[in-house]
Each structure stands twice: as structure tokens, then as C-alpha cells.
Length: 319
Length: 319
Image (cartoon, rainbow over all chains, first blue to last red; front, side, top):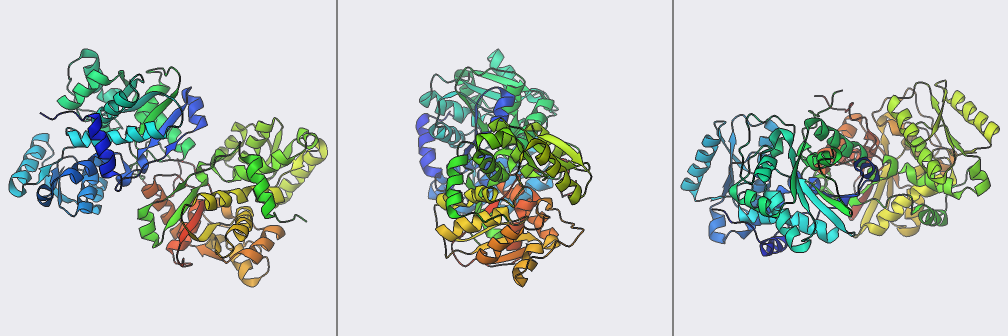
């Protein structure tokens, strides 16, 4: 079973990936603060390399491989931001990245992986087919499987975003919040905050239409995602792993949800007021705050904007 | 006749407006650099208050008024970003802002001015009617006319963007470039650069479809805008004033143009690679660079992204 990252893992990750990822800026907006009724520090992982925080975990896992392991390449069966990030990290290390994607994957996602030099292996659009295809590549090439979140070093890498947010905040933080999909970002954030800001609550946020984490958190037991999942926040439809669920259960203060309408509204607020492009998943924590799913109690809210990869031709508001 | 700002005016403006405007960040993108073939430092005035550099000049002019002058309010006949900026500056000083707008002005522009507390006075959609309406308000109320660029303190305020860009660059600048509409931003940038970086060329950029500045620069004589002007960069359709033209003629290294297709392409490149929202006018300097209208000769290019006010429901690419 995958073990959870320690704080030391996150500190090591910070050093390991420093030359490869951006120390992304923190932006603020008094207009968004007014709308939310609190001060928010936005950690802009939409400006991260490959357009999402996933570059942190991917670089950490790839750079941690021994020369012998690395030479055999890496493989993943994620088709989203993690796949593009893994392809980039592998390219910078000069090793192959095999990315198993369903034949039905959207063209922009395939294009992103290909643009970073990833080798796409198509399979049938079922989870079983993806796992089988990845296993076959591991058997054939000896490549290291780097899953999108159920991996100690991947989650440790994602935790470096919170490390930077806490270090660069410049004012007291009263809470931290980030989206929850598979839980890698949340797990890394929780471990970082537990060490550096042990009294500050960390709140996970997910779409109400994909609320496996929130249900599991309340019941104390991992819950399946109810299928089919219909949310605009397509980066957050994944179910958690035992590892990420365990970290969440022991360290999270709360896991809250946001409606689809609030997610679109929050995304639009960020675009129009802050002039930055975020993907729907990034807007979920702000959406939950705007809906009153939780109330900050003093100090600024540190909010991780997870990514900015959207299809500019298909925006969730009409013309 | 309006006199040109001095460097001292710009330094004074910097101090005067510091508590009211953002010191906007400089962002970079290795992917855009690769596309352009040079290193670019983007000064993000799209993150400025009211979404454009215009807040700098408007605050400078409004805060410089004596208490007696201020009490009578301010008036302008611009309907774009300057009007919204002037309304905000007036509101923060607690004085009225009268904004003369043609009855045909787009609803989002009226809404922006109204949102900042401006009093909109509608008039017929001709320049003569706008000037007459503004004059009538001046006569009636004694309000100070603050035009969008033909004003020493407005242009001085716009020059503070270049001041910050030069101070915060962190690496040698080989050139500066910004869009040219009425020429207030260019004039302020030129005066700032002439003092701080006298050997560094400053290049103005405008749409080929509204190339009055480029034609005038080459001929050494102010040229009229050829009407009707059809460019997506609707912030750059204004003709220059004697003052801004004079500063441009004596201090600019060159004034170059960009095609409409290149402007859309540059805008899309900034959106998709940098994850920031810029209006078409902001993309004109990058468009000119991508088209090879001029060639940087070493050092980073400091490029001012002038604003980010776009109608998110009407983007220049189809779905």
C-alpha cells in the first residue's frame, strides 16, 4: 500500500523540483474579497508549468528515480493534467513517458501530452482497460508507474504549493483551502499545514455532483463516486485512494461542496475581476466559500488555484 | 496647449498614486519567448485597478487637484477604460465624476463607469456632440476636464508603469514596447525611459488598421486616422494629440504595426500560454514582434500589457 508523504518528503521535494517548476505568485483582488466577505490569497498554480500544480508531483517523482530506473522510462494512465506534467518531467530528464489514454479522450488533452513529448498509448475507454494497458507497458519496458495521486512522492510534490503559499503569504493565514479530486493536492497541503500551521484549519472543496470525499469524510469511511459524474469541474471526478483518504480523514478540518451554478459563477468572477484564466476545478473552493459552505474565522484564506487548462473555444457561458 | 510630462512629473506621480494603484507584477513565459524568439518581461497592467493602466493617469490627475478644484468634480468625454478609471479615482476622493458617453456606447462600458460611481451623461454619437456636452458640464459645474491622454498629469501617471517595469525587471532590458492609441502611455513610457535607460529603444505598436501614429512618425507630421477604423483593438482607434505626437516624434525609436490576424493570434497565445486575460489592444506589441515588424537586439523586451477588459461573451475565436 502507498504510504502518505511526511513533512520531510515535502521539504525534500521543494529542493528537488526548485529548478524545474515556477514559484507561482500569490494574487489578491479586493473585488473578489468583497464578494466573498473575507480576505483571500490566491496561490496561482494556473501559472505553473503545464498550466497546473501537477508539474510539482510529476517532477518530484521523476527526479527521484535512480538513473537505472529512469532509463526505463515512466508510465501513467491518467489522461488529464498529470499526464502532460509527467510527459514534461520525463522530457526534461531525457527519458520516455508512456501515457495510456482512452481512445475517446478529447483532442486537446492528447495534444497537450504529445506537445510535451509523451508517447500516447490508446486503449478502450474503461478503467480496467487503462490499468491493463499500463501494466503491459510496465512488464514490457520496466517503466516506473507514476499514478496521478496515489503515490507518496507525487503527493509530496503537490504539498510544495502549500509550502510556498505559507512562506510567501506575508500576512496571517486563518485557513487553507484547495480542491479535492483524487486527493493528492489535499494530502500534500494537509501534511505541510499540519507541520507549519498546526492550528489553521484546512478545508477541501469538491463539486456537489462528485462529492465522494465529503461523504466519506462525514461517514469516516471511503465512499465510491456515484456514476455517472456530471460536473463542469472535470478534474475532480476521480475517487480517492486509501492513502489520500487516510490523510484527509486524520488532518482535514472539513470537506465542503459547491453547486454547479456556483462553480461557473466563481470561475467567471475570477476571470472577470482578476483577469486570470482558471479551469472550473480551480474555482470550486471559491464557489464553496461564496455559497457559505464554511465560514472563515479571521485571518486570510489561502486558496490554491489548481490549474488553468481550459478549451478557450468552449467556455461555460454563452455568447 | 498641453505640455509634455517631465521625468520629475512621473516621479511625483509615482508617490502620489502609490496608495491607490497596484504595483502590478511582471510575468514571463518561456513558451511565449520561444514563439517570439526573445525574452519578454510582461508588465501586467491588465491586473491594474479597473483592469487597465488608465487608473494611473486618472488617479494622478484627480489627486493633484486642489481641494477647491476637486470639490467641483471632474468630467471626461472618453467612454473606454479612462472613464471607468476616472470614476474610481473621483469616488475615492469623494467627488463627482461626469462621463459624457455617446448614446450608442456598449452596455458593458456604461456598466463599468456606473459601477465605479460615475455619472453618465449621454449625447449624440459624434465627437462634436461629446466635446460640446463636456464643455457644457464644465460651464455649469466648474468641473475639471480630465481628457484621456492629452494632459500632462495623465501622461505622467501612465509613465509610472514603465518606472515600475524598469525598477522591477531584475535583468537587463534591451527594449521597451507598448501599444499606441492616443499616445498617453507611450509618452509617459518614453519620458521615463529617456531618463532611466537612455540607450534603450522604445517601440510603439499599433494596429495596421489604425496606423496614424506609424504614418505620422515616418512622415514627421501628425496624420489623421483614416475613417472608418476597423480593428479588434478598439482601445487604439483614437488619433494622437499635438503633445503625445511631439513626445513620440522626439523620443521613440520606432512605431510599428500589426495585422488583425496577428493581434488575435498574439492575444490567444497570451491567454492560452500565460493564463491571463488581456484585451486585444494589449496584444498588439506582441503581435508586431511575432510578425517581425522589429527585431530585438539583445536584452529582455519590456512589454506593457495595457489592460484586460474584454467581454467574455464575445471572444474573437469561434466555438
